[in-house]
Image (cartoon, rainbow, N blue to C red):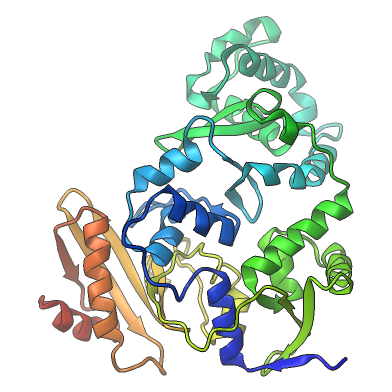
Length: 399
């Protein structure tokens, strides 16, 4: 059977609809609305940068509008949460029922990093002590552990060693996240913190990878092998085998997309909306843009985060957020929340060459909503960027 052909615009709309864009903001954002988005995108990537806002809050804001961040905190970090953390895409919040899908990765981490001479092999006594600490005290942060309690197990350990040891237990699946306090992860033994049905579930590696690829395809709507594999950081070869099985099962439909140089696949439940109406600023770690090659192929949008670029070499700014208008990425805005002075600083603002004329008019009310969501009273627009003057005019402020 000949593969269906999609236009590039159709592919964009499919992908955005799969990610939860194109729907009206709900009148009230509660736990139900947050859960619906989390179910749709499958995970929230975590990052410590807080110059504007921590990244895991932003995908919900982009899809739902302003919401109470404490609701998300309680939902994903609270006691008896239905979410945990693991290395999914990067460090990420995931539904607890998907935790067993990563056992093969936990086992691979243990095998790879426990070889003779490794840090793990050389620090067995400390890891045993940490296991005992977690068993005795339950959920604790690295900073809360009494470092000198390890004397009887072979010596005194500093905070950095404790943190390193806990992170290895986390990677190996022996410890899990049990919430966060001031963004510091709290650790607990997986055997104690997870529901027994989750902890005891064993899934063969090939089955787990196939299920992760299916979740990825659902979150993408449409994509190529590399797109689906990257979502959960799966290597191409096992991903290719899983995709073939999913095609045979009718879960994925082979398609071609105009302008794409690789075979593409459509999730069987993907919607193909006639249009997508949206105005949103995306986190650098939003699933729509976190795979930079996909963003360039799908939207013609070349994007790199410049946090680690020396200031004189930055092109667009330190924490530049892509601007989504309808089904296109049309600009980028570098934002900073000056919490002390209660000001949202637009440090630079740029449009792409084909951005619509109403870009500034669409962005200005979003910036007002963003400032209010952040609890900031004013917006200051700096003069950097080809959109700055128009944005300042729309906001009625001087540069």
